[in-house]
Amino acid sequence: MVAKDSCSSLNRHAMIGGNGLESYTKNSSYQRGVIDASKLHIQSAIAKKLQPENFATLDAFSIADLGCSVGPNTFFAVQNILEAVNLKYKTQERNTRIPEFQVFFNDHSMNDFNTLFKCLPPNREYYALGVSGSFYSRLFLRASLHFVHSSYSLHWLSQVPKEVTNRKSLAWNKGRIYYLHAREELGLVKVQICLGVVGRVCGRRRYDGCMAVVVINVAVSWRCDG
Image 1 (cartoon, rainbow, N blue to C red):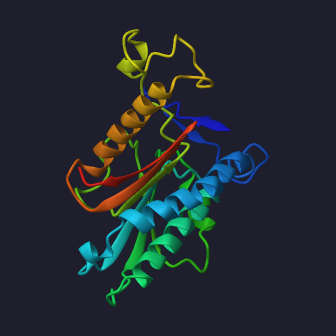
Image 2 (cartoon, rainbow, N blue to C red):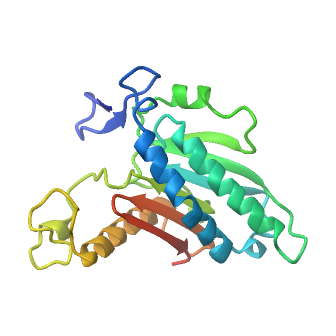
Image 3 (cartoon, rainbow, N blue to C red):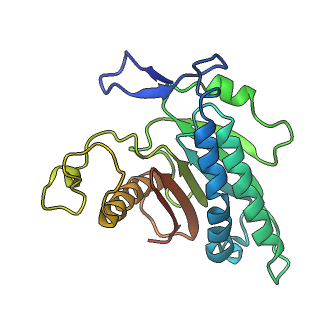
């Protein structure tokens, strides 16, 4: 399910595009299940932490899905977020105006964005934009995003974190490549690494948005205010 970029010295990979038997579209039912399982967690985080009053003058509410691949999973994830954000706006005591929505679909430049945009839901309630490039580098203007989502993508690391190779670190996993039965501290360190990645993507500036990161064996939601 992985297509290799032979032109890149970094050996970057993207999921196999199109709709063939080996494509990501045909082989991502497990990832879809993860998105479905995280739906209630994301809805709860948005209900508790998103503050629409901070966006009173906002014309567009911006969402980014990091590691979107070719769909359709990314569309389900975005729809879950939109439903929760709309509900949050509608339940405000004040008559808060619901802004328009724009969604940034991000993945490597090798990603099959053609298939992605061909499969966009016809009745979507947002403007769709593609952003190619690694999420390990800066992708967006500071404070330009209001919700960042990434599901089963951040474990594709650009390099082995130093913490993992340090025997004295809480992230040391005894040289194992699997996570099963690992210590709870290892999961917490893994989350910190992931949040650091997204912090670089967002530009490390204080603003009142939210993000949801789903990685193997770890689910976390966090308010992007620091």
